[in-house]
Amino acid sequence: MIASEYKEKSAGGAVMLQVRAVSKVFETNSQKAPSNHVVLNGVSIDIKDGEFVTIVGPSGCGKSTLLNIIAGLDSPDSGSVFVKGERKTSTDPDRIVIFQEGALFPWLTVIENVEFGLKLTGVPKEKRMESASHFVHMMQLSRFSNSYTYQLSGGMKQRVAIARALAMNPDILLMDEPFAALDVQTRDMLHSHLLQIHEATKKTILFVTHNINEALLLGNRIIVLSPSLGNIKRDISIDLPRPRDIDSPELVLLKRQILKELEEDFQLARKENTTATKEKAAN
Amino acid sequence: MLEKKTQQQPKKKQQTKSRFDVTDAANTALFLAAFVGIWQLVFMLGIWPKTLMPSPAQVATTVANLVSNSLLTSGIGVTMIRLAAGFVISIGIGAVVGLAMVKFRGFGKTMSSFAVGLLTFPSIAWVPFAILLIGFNDLGILFVVIMASVFSVMITTYSSIRNIPPIYLRAANNMGAKGFALFRYVMIPAATPSLILGIRQAWSFAWHALIGAEMLITTVMYGVERYGLGHVLSVGRDYNDMSQIIATMIAIFTIGLIFDRVIFRKIEERVRSRWGLDQHSDNA
Image (cartoon, rainbow over all chains, first blue to last red; front, side, top):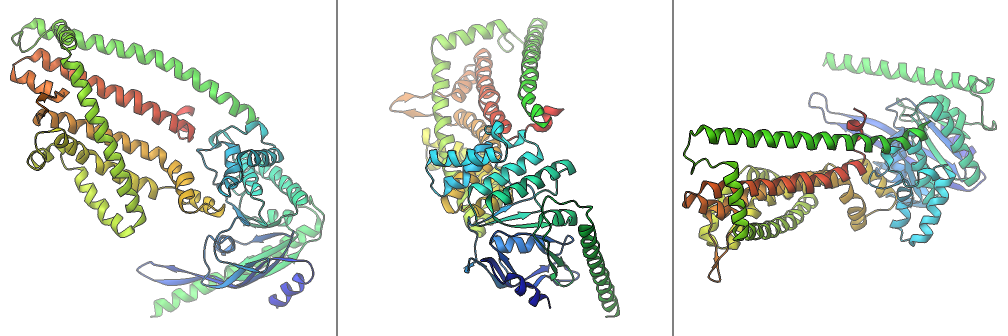
């Protein structure tokens, strides 16, 4: 059922990213009970060029793992990732990750951080400075070009991280809970900033979050990951114009549905856990 | 609001810094005065004969004499050259082996426990070995200095690189940094704050070992005796010249202070402030 749902969606429009039957198992090496935890169980997703997809799920549902596998920072136990039809097994500047912690280099200034990737690809100094200042300006950080990262607030750091990612001109932006550590006001500001960027650059964005509101406000499409399935529970398209109002009836309804499904899932997982422990006790 | 805050920060920092410097200088002067005063007092009490406990003034004269007959200055020169040579070689070897330890994990594991063992090994205990193997010459001294500091550099290189927050490496990897570029543009700068601490420690090991080795290994090269500070010190003992001993000790102390407080601390402060590691102390 799920399979037919995404196939339907991928019809029409150029497919940018294909995730095919990706599985990942984590082995917990505790001496008492060595067990295998299936985090991703044959996940398949198709994402079209220019789509803004949010992946939502509780912590431990494997959403960050999925993102890392797509980025090539982690390898799947089985399954594969294709970008524009080409199979990818390692990291590549065509898919840039924006981490929760920003991961800016503290020994570089804002502008040096932004031009870092360009320096690696051998872009001449003048050209990369030009490009870096363009993106620093776009993120409204021109005044802080020569500041070091410790002089910046959390929100500013994430803006630098976004500028750094955009400077690489990637096909896909992979965002791993980038605003989770920020206060509500800053997050709201960055949401509208990100939407503007998406509007202006038409980049394909994959945005992982545990925050349902965030997922509902940003995405053209929301993928709900379930920890008990290790797979996609729902794949929802939202055609509402953005910026959206989280209190609008459509979103409230959707939010309620998603929460209910996650709750069911949670109950299910707990039941499985208790039966597992019972079995163990019986043995 | 946030912007204002960041702009004010440098100003505030400067203010506290300059105020601190004044009190620092006053405290140092006060401490020195008290020290010389107590010394003078002990001298005047006459517990020891004047030859064994010279007055500060006598020692000052000796310092002047030792400088004018260039025993002290050339001693400092010889010692500094040895220190520089030994330290540079240590850093070279230590860095290369340390990097190899990072690259080859099995080697790294074994070598690091071996090196930790040698780190605690008293450097002066290398002296008999060096004398027999190499002889009474500069190379013998150099050997002791290198043995004293090379393991510290090795361990520091190994652990600084291994302790780089993985997030930097992942981010760099993601932007296409591989091989040498990753090493040059990410690993080296990311490891720098802790590398500097280790190099400072290696310097202090080298310095301790050098003076000790100079006291025990008298070197004659091309028929000319080459006196290092350690040698000047032991000559003072041979001639029962306490004044010369104290004068040399003061020279050794001053050199150590200059290196540690002025050179290494300056570098460390610069790195720490640029890497943003001084945040908490600023706010406090």
